[in-house]
Image 1 (spheres, rainbow, N blue to C red):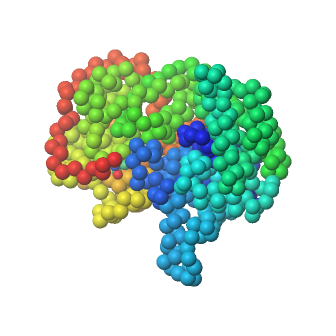
Image 2 (tube, rainbow, N blue to C red):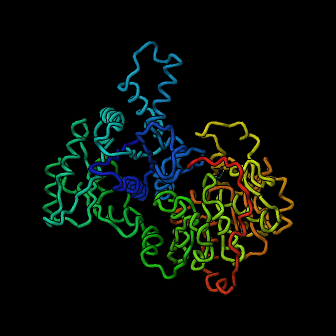
Image 3 (cartoon, rainbow, N blue to C red):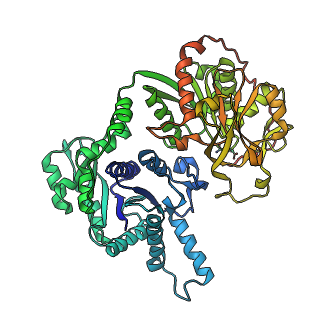
Length: 561
Ligand code: GLN
């Protein structure tokens, strides 16, 4: 039978519950246990797929094609464990299931209620995951903060489940804040006491407290928290701010968190092995020897979390190269106003991420023109690849007004268009080409050099594709098709023949990058950028302003994201 660790948050949001949960996952894995993590999100959306990145940050796509919370990205990156659609459960999904059952008559005339019907469904989602993935420990993170109305059914389900599995089989880890009050020059424990008290009101006792604090606390503070919150002294862990998130597991392990967890769960395990994490991830992150600057030209650059996995994937590729990757976040609309050269002249590589809608597209195209002409390494992801095709069509094939039908339904040259199976699809949620699909990599391409494989599998999240009617014209102009999904004859990767490193894929490689195993395309991109930093700067560059803006956008079908 699996054991359970429930992670809740108190006092304020944004304390890093996802990182804390993922870190506990890594620590237990390093003790030889098989773990998985689950995120319970109390909102009513069935999944975050329809939410704006401004609301929710990145949508993390799993192998099995679920659009999930970005915390699942932390879980995969820290533990290496593959997440599935069952690793993220929202209140909306639980209610949807219960309502479907009610309509089918499954409840045999009963009045359907939050307790027991919703709570039963929540418990089922948790225990089923443990059974499906056959793990020793499931770490269940509850979204939101204790005291929120929405999280109550989840906490009640946890209370019941703890009761059912009994002592020694489940514990609560509560993440709180111990703020420093400057005027008093003191760390304050009251918010933590209140938050633990709030949990107790609903029948949950926290066994371990992870206390976020800016300053290390004295033993007296630890004792006070332990005494007033009813936890053991050594179960009060200081979660100090660290320079790099990958240090968190080491910091927690130093305070014996894994030992405490194992003792409480009555598990006996070998000593931890975190040597590779320490030397190849943390040490390198803290003491890089080189530095490379990469521009991300996107729409949601002001938001810390919107391109989370891309930032992490770049960092991973920096680690293997002993380099710090400095990301310059550039708003694509700013390029439309100020021009690409002035904003990109000081970077060594250019990356265009995925996205939806027309806003900022012309700026992205200008950035691509710049990277193409200067020979700066370019990586295009999903929408970034579609933009690269449009740019090549307009400026190398002379197809005036070439566009994606997502942005201009009347374009004379729909070089990017809807898949037939997507025409007629009107529902937004879960209706794209989603999840992992296998494709062929063509020999003698940069993509092949990077992967060292002739076939691989990557995760998708899109509706539009390269229009095969234009393939010949594009390849005659210098575009190289480097990867294809043969069954559907779909273009998966493109490159530019006469360029040091210009690669773009229709999928999202960022979701598969791990600190100890950077993604091959990101790695090759960062290496090319590091290498080219001295060589390519010499190439002179002159792109007339507005060169790529030759499309008359009559009707846009952009989704207002
Ligand atoms: N908007 C594009 C499409 O739907 C690209 C999506 C993406 O970048 N994830 O095909």
